[in-house]
Length: 89
Image (cartoon, rainbow, N blue to C red):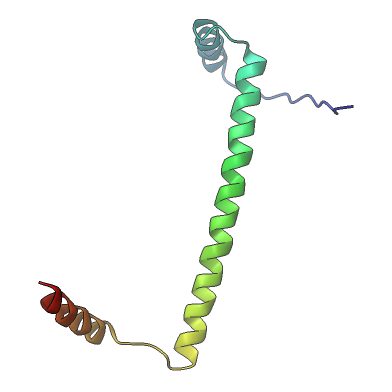
């Protein structure tokens, strides 16, 4: 059996009226539109969370490289890639 929950929100009357008009125009219900928005929000948060974890791991690896002295100065990196671009051109 699927558990159901009710959510109550407070919004400005004008926004509530505009939302009601929008769902009527879209030939759907307020509940269906809100369910869809909640589902999209949850999925976006999952993606954002995964990206944050990826980014945090990448930053941690970068910090470890810096601490170990395994870095290339920006000017040196630019020079290296300038030489590579000349070879390809």
